[in-house]
Amino acid sequence: MTPSQIRDRTPTLESVPAYLDNAASIPMRPEAVEAMLPFLTERYGNPSGAHAVSREARKAVDEARDTVAHCLGARPAEIVFTGSGTEADNLAIIGAHAVRPGPTVCSAIEHHAVLHACDALGDNRLAPVGADGVVDLDRLADLLDPSVSVVSVMLANNEVGTIEPLADVAPLVRERAPEAVLHTDAVQAFSWLDVADAAASADLVAVSAHKFGGPKGVGALVVRQGVTVRPIIHGGGQERDRRSGTHNVAGIVAMAAAMRATVEQREATVARVRELRDRLAEGLLATVPGCTETGDRASKIAGNCHVSFEGVESESLLVLLDAAGVYASAGSACASGAVDPSHVLAAMGLSRAQAIGSLRLSLGPGTTDADVDLALAVIPPAVERLRAS
Ligand code: PLP
Image (tube, rainbow, N blue to C red; front, side, top):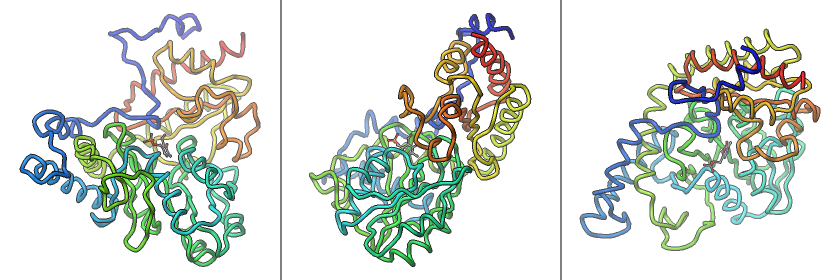
């Protein structure tokens, strides 16, 4: 494909664009849409009330809580429904810190929902990561002492897809900061990893529905029995006084349906998407000179393909790809538009030029062979065109 063909390849109703930004959000699963619709129309009750209409809504929330708990390896009473993954992370960090104030420790590659919550509390210690994007356990251990109140290490990173060694982090925390609460942000992990198992050692676990086929604006925090978080939203005392506000019944029901479908299909999805991701990464490495892959593919979630193109600004590349129907991201969605290279890539030691030339292609359950074909047809000439200009 020539550069002018790329320019002309604006998506039309006939062409099928390649959505490769699944880490930002994925389409709702049909099971989730179907589950939520009655709660937007005829089943409108407020679950906090006492009459039959309310009781029906409460029953739906209770059933959803059972499903979410099961999928996360928790007890129903340990689930706190929230208004987003961001809120779940904030409740974890700020809520646990309020119970026992002290320094916080988090990995240098956390999502801003964790990083900024820790920063807001004043005394945050950043645990470095290696060039592979995996937290350095020795350096983390050095930051831990009995005064630490909260430790947060994500299960999978949103930009480069690295899976963090939570099972190795937990014993370090228990030994060196025995009263600290261990939080993990599993927002990007849930589609790809058995979070019930992978996060079993954490006291607090955050998820967000729109990352696995539920609606936007609903999430959950697991708060293990015996762990206390102070509410950050005050009001009617819903969620056992841990998160006030009328339940988003439709969203909660849909999140549970999406979780169930994700868990049922996870193994097959991971195997299929990993093959597509490998073909995409290898295709780019083989056809684009000066293309490097970020991190070690073996220790990443299956949907993440993260590459850097020498001598290219990925913000410009995104414009060409957008016009050609390939939708990707230059960093995390929250960071796009920002001029500074992402804190994740900086923490991994990428140079400014490498970081600025980075492209995140994130695959999801809906990604097809045709999406990868289109990306492999469009990206190499687009990179060439930018280098020539
Ligand atoms: N944590 C991670 C790792 C994420 O990738 C995101 C969203 O991009 C969030 C937290 C925030 O979740 P939400 O979009 O539901 O606020």
